[in-house]
Picture (cartoon, rainbow, N blue to C red):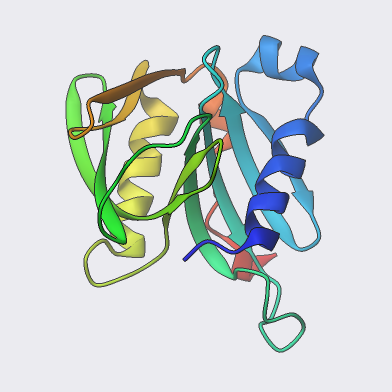
Length: 167
């Protein structure tokens, strides 16, 4: 489940990159408090972020560690269950990723972390397709949601993003 600290980090990371850099490159990147990130917010306010934290849980148990991906919508969705498949469609090829759901009053967030249902290697392959792709849509089947994102700048932004243990 996504914690309030993670949601606050998501917000800080979304605004950390200057708007001009996001407009020019598409993807904003950085390293903050032990977490490397690459992400962007589309014109509709939906956010997609790819993260890798090298912070030890013994240092701070409230911080998420290792690789993770967050997708958030600026509206509350009525979803049942703790996880739903979120579909990433890159250049017409769809990949369903099981993601945990957190519905707030004004937003709905979806989070992926390594699991047997979708491993780190599978996510690395998806991230590699984001790096090399031209078109991206992220969405849900029910309710029907499709959010387009630019992949301009994703090649450099996502390069080695999951190598946080090597930093």
